[in-house]
Each structure stands twice: as structure tokens, then as C-alpha cells.
Image 1 (tube, rainbow, N blue to C red):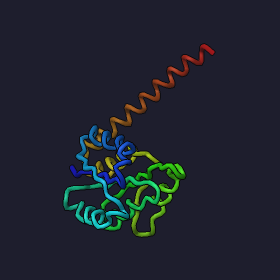
Image 2: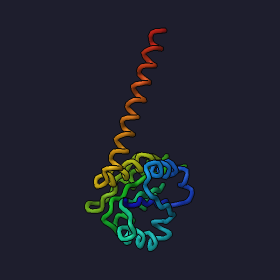
Image 3: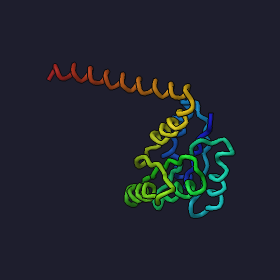
Image 4: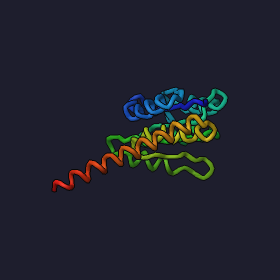
Length: 165
């Protein structure tokens, strides 16, 4: 199975990406986590994404805050899917990162999840890999079925509580 790269713009983004790391591990997807900056180490980011396919990656997740150009910089050097996680910062609560990540020019797409939504980034990466991996697709299907059961159980419990009101 292909690997997933998680590239953070700063090590301070680790608390945001930790749910993605955990989710990918739970699904048995090999993950490499690195720190690279679109602005301070652009050559390293370029080289990583340029060689990512040859190095066994199938998807790149880019987590960055503020100007959040990391996803676009990585996407510019590869045709692998890039998923951006806009990270919340002290200023503008991540809206700056969301807009910087989602508003890519035509021809260089970056799929974008919600602010700090690392788990969804991991699940989207897994769904992309599952296009060609039926075992992973089944794991994802089982997760969805489990989520549905949990909601149904919560609804049953709610209905019981409502009888007491």
C-alpha cells in the first residue's frame, strides 16, 4: 500500500495533525511526518514533493497556518493528491489559512478540509488510497457502519430520556 506524507509548516502544528497520524495508523497506513516550510525551506518542500511518488507515497497532507502556502508549494511539484489542513493561529482563528489553502489557481488543486480537521484529512487520504485497495475500502466501510450504529444508539437513548420530560 502507498504511504501518506504529513508535512507540517511548523512543529507547533503537531497537536493539530496528531489525530491524522493516529487515524492513519489505526487504518494500517504507513505515514511519514516532516516539518517543511513553504517560505523558509522551499527547496526542501519542492524536492520532497517532486520525489514523493518515487518514494512510495500516494497522498500528501499539508498542515499550515497563517499564510498557509505549504499545500500549494507541495502541489506545484507533484501530481499526487495534496490535502491541505488549514491550522488555526492566534490571529483570524484559521480563516487566513483556510482561504490561503482553498484558493489555489487553476491547474494546481489542493483538496482542503476544515480548520484543524486533521482526522478528515486522514480519512480523505485513506479514501483516495482505497480506490485501488479493497482491504482498506472495507476498513473504511466498517468505520462508517460503526459510526451509524453509534448514532442510532444515541438516538435510542435520547428517545428514552424524552419520555421522562
